[in-house]
Length: 185
Image (cartoon, rainbow, N blue to C red; front, side, top):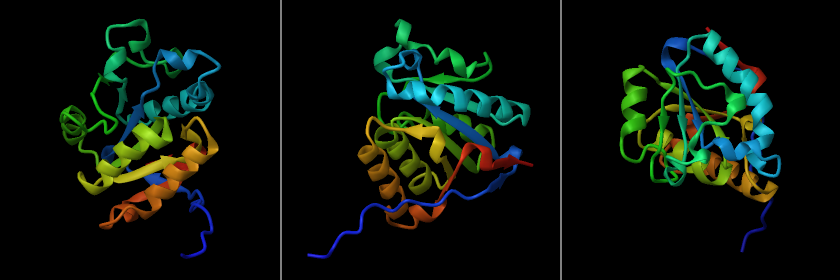
């Protein structure tokens, strides 16, 4: 057996993105995030400000909410994110939010090549959606490390590690940054 050194912890890098080729996908940040006991509540303030910058740059935003919450009070996007009526809310029945094809159709229509992925949980929706985005759909995936989280440090770090080692060149399509290190041109 080989000695383990722990998970890969990528260093965030500054990234400049073409607004005409970029979209943001906000994963599973629904009304449950209003509860300060839910880990996703920690993302409300930083993502609220980031999404305002995104909108000022005219970058499309797409939200997902788990199908189990559709039609319930928890089916709404978290209020601090200030969702616009023009920003779609999808309810895919899978951890990979590309399931069902609706997300891919929206991103394709928008001409997206770069996909900023934010949301909660890192080890569920973020991991599976980012993997499919890079491996299957060939997007350049940008993950702001301060725009995703999980219930534990272990779960978060494990998921980030997995995204750095997924095979078939998919890991090379994933970049890590911070919300304040993303610039739009």
